[in-house]
Image (cartoon, rainbow, N blue to C red; front, side, top):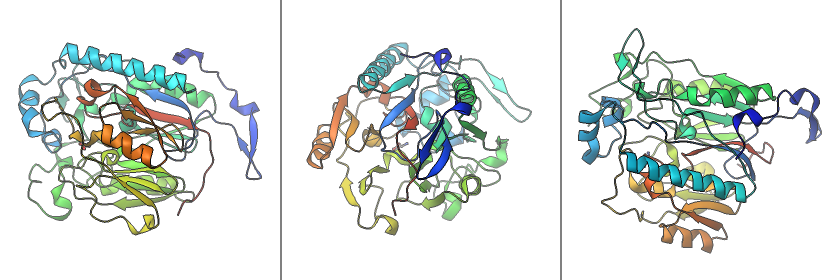
Length: 376
Ligand code: GLY
């Protein structure tokens, strides 16, 4: 595996390539969609994974049966045997990616057991450095750091900063959305049973979003308003990307929305995977796309899922238009993908799933070979 320090420095000024008749600066960061051939990826780590302290923002998306864990053990490590098993799966995933020709980078683990504070609030610890998809969005040659809504994740980006600095030195662009204050005004504890925008625990007093609430389809980027992503956050990204990209807001039948990638997953040009419980109507703009309806998850009911639903079964990662990483136990999904001319690569990831995500969440594609297109 390539370490962070082996990334070549400052080559970009000298390397150019012709693209669509336009002379463009080469960038180590270049990814426009979820399906072009993957060349370089960041894969998370589970070192120091810590149970975040209880807060209404967590309760809004937590499976009920684990709420007690957060109420009683916030700031303590997740079970060590589960962390070790998840780490082994992450390491095996890295080997699979490398065998498929992908360059793999890892973040620098941060000690999440250390507490921290701002002038407005204090937390007894962080969470983990396991889900790079949540903390940053790659749009073209730019890495955009997300203004995350959970206090426990306030400094999670630090694990990626040395990687981002090297990408920047090598010619990538690097920006961060305004850092939110996350005072009590950012949360609405009365969200349950409310209507309209009040049904989300996150209010709209400042921009917040998790990058995993966006999926990229070339010039069109689709976002969901969720418990962690608000209108101001979506609007901030829309204006930041204005001119080259269109940001669309979608809404689904999900009472606990947090991250679009277990609900609505564009797989390749003209192919879309949907969650049958959450997607009642295909958005008009996708009319004509082949729709794959995700089979029910095979994750056993009793499997610990501390931070997400079992629908992370559909949180798959495209390596190109055909090859796709899928959890080995998701046989019906593997069969469905095969029947629609994809090439599934089954991998073990059940222990990692317990931490709230799967292959898409655990990775951040830094570079895919391809250019900016409009697919609609
Ligand atoms: N966060 C996605 C899900 O729980 O399904």
